[in-house]
Length: 273
Ligand code: AMP
Ligand code: MN
Ligand code: MN
Ligand code: MN
Image 1: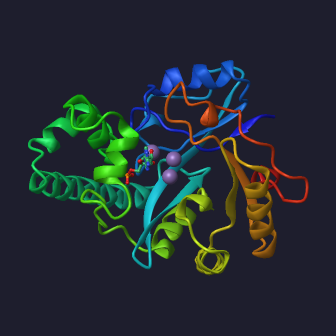
Image 2 (image 1 turned 45 degrees about the horizontal axis):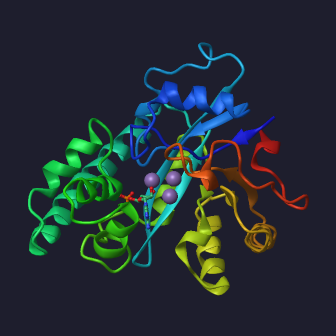
């Protein structure tokens, strides 16, 4: 089996529609794919396993959460999509996204950038609006050269558009996943740029809340990082997950199914399935 347990579609900030993503995953040898859009499971609305021989779907999501004032992401895998509690939680999460988008637009207008909300909305379409859509608007309106520059100048950590919204605490988000029958996975720990001590206390709180896995591998990554995260997983008795965090074609480090290998001394999250 080739697992890719973290990927995005047009239902959030990915470039491919769900069917296109599935086709690309299959072409890259993936046999079990989790679509983990930001704060939505809409990608699954018209997808069934049966229509897609050769690849199985693991119902997933990537939820935004707050940990002592920082944004962190919790992936949920193997969710029961029909769960009422999940949909109630997601409605609140989606409301937070909309409110945050309004604040981002207001902050950008204070920087002289007008109409950012409408601009970002046009890129988000029917999907969850997020900072990448503002980034695309900033590129399209000539304010920045590319999306990286949009994050560096306007949207990234500490910039005007980095609005610390009202994401719920890690424990709350983790409990939603558990109540939907899913496995909670602490996503891409390296992205939080925390010391080992900080990351350790985040992992402790996550385990306390019922989290059971951590992404030891996120895309193509350095062997030293894989070792560090495998050690974290083993120290906290967390299962190990692996996903590309694919958003769009053309980014070699996050191509579907092309992640670095999990080390031999961790317990893969799928072993328990
Ligand atoms: P949001 O969920 O709206 O806070 O946006 C977070 C998303 O923005 C991430 O999932 C990435 O897809 C994207 N992102 C975050 N940082 C950067 C960056 N520095 N450059 C490009 N995209 C980024
Ligand atoms: Mn994203
Ligand atoms: Mn993420
Ligand atoms: Mn992601």
